[in-house]
Length: 279
Image (cartoon, rainbow, N blue to C red; front, side, top):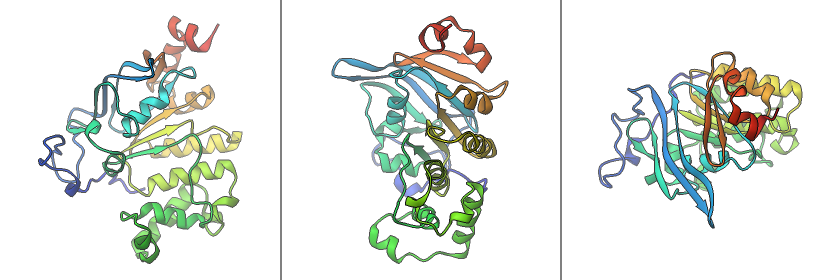
C-alpha cells in the first residue's frame, strides 16, 4: 500500500471563509497525535436525543472499535463526522485545524475522510476493476469519467488494490455478480483508491461468512498504521480480533460514551453490562 495517505488539495481550503485552516498544503495537522476530535456533540430529531454531548478522540493511525446497542447513536455520529447531519451543538475537527462542521460532504471526503455504509454501494453494471478506477478519479463528472485515460501508475494501483481485497480473479466480472461479502470488500477497495486518512466503517462484517470475516480482520490489520480507522460493529469476536489485548474500545449508549478501555476492561464495566452485553 502507498504510505502517503490523506493528501488534501489545498485549493479547496483557505482563509477566504475564515473557517478552515490547514497547517501545510497537503497535510492534516496531527502534531498532538490525534486525527479526530469530537467534543460535546448533540443531535436531536423531533425531540429525540440521538447524540447527547458526545465526546471522543481518535489517535492518528489508530484502529478504534465502537460498540453499543441499537439506537446508541453510532451511525448518527458517523453522519455528523462526514457532514451528512449537522449537529445542534458541539465541535468536530480532523486533526488540529480542519473544522468539519463548516464543510459539506464532498469537501470532507476530499480531506481524506472515507465512509463505508452498512449496505455496500458499488456500480453493479461495471466491472470490478472499473469500480476501482471510478473511485480513483478525482474529477467525478460523468463526461470526464467516460473519457479519462488510465495511466500506468493508476493501473498498478488498481492491480495492487485488487490483490489486497482478494478480488484479482474477479476483476473482469461485473460488480452485480459478486456475493454480498465480495461487494463489501470491493467498497473498501474503492475507498482505499481515494487514499483516505480516516476510514469510518459501519458494520463492515455484516452478512459475511466466517471466512470472509476472518479475511476482513486480516485486511484491516494490514491497513493498521497506514490510515486511521473507526469500526462500528456488533460481532464481538470480530471486535476482539481487531482490538487485540491492548486496543481501545469505545462503548456508546443513549447518544454518549459510557465506557472506554480494552475489550476486557469494558466487558467488566457495570454500565456496559446493563445497557449492552447483559449478564
